[in-house]
Amino acid sequence: MPKAARALALGLLAAALALPAIAQVLYRWVDADGRTQYSDKAPKGFKGEVTRIDTEVEKSTMPPSKAPMPAPAPAAAKPAAGTEDIGAKRRATRTRLEQRLASARANVDAAKKALTESEVPQDEERQVVQQRLTTGGMHGMAPRSNCRTEVGKDGRKHQMCPVQVPTPEYHDRVAGLEANLRKAEEELADAEQAWRRGVD
Image: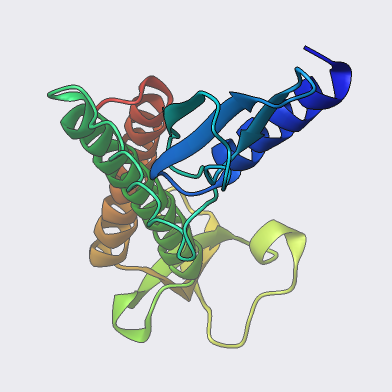
C-alpha cells in the first residue's frame, strides 16, 4: 500500500476513534491506479469491489461537564474498646489530684496565718495575777507604782506586782491551731505524693 494511502487510512481511523461511542462505518476499495482508498461514504459510480468495515469505538474519555461528587472521607477509626474510657479516667484522676493539692496548700496557708495571728491573746484571754519579784524590781529595774512590798516568812522583802498573762483558754486555742497546722501539713504531703504517683 502506498504511503499516502496508508496515512489517509490511519487518519480516518484516528478520527473515528476520537468520535463519541457509536458504530462507525468505513469503506475500502482499490482504485484504477491500484491504490487502496478509505472513506466513510461508498464511492459513487465505482464498479469494482468495495469492502464495508464496521468499527465500534469506545465512548469518549472526556470528563463530564459536571465533576462527580467526591467520595466521602472514611470515618475516623474508633479507638479500641475501653481505650477512650481509660484516657477519660486518667484525665479525671489528674484533675482531681490537682484540685486536692491546691486545696491542701490553701489549708496550710490558712493554718499558718491563723497561728501567726494568735500570737497576741485576745482581751478575754488575758488575766491579771500577782507576781512575786525580789527587792529592786524586775530584773533589777525600779519597782512599779502598782507593786506592794511584802516581807516573807524568812524575813526577806519582796515585791508583789500585778501582771497580765494569757488564760488557759488562750493556750488551748493556740495548741488547737498548732494541731490544725500539723494536720494540714500532713495532708499536703499526702496530696503531693498522690499527685506524683498519679493515683488517689
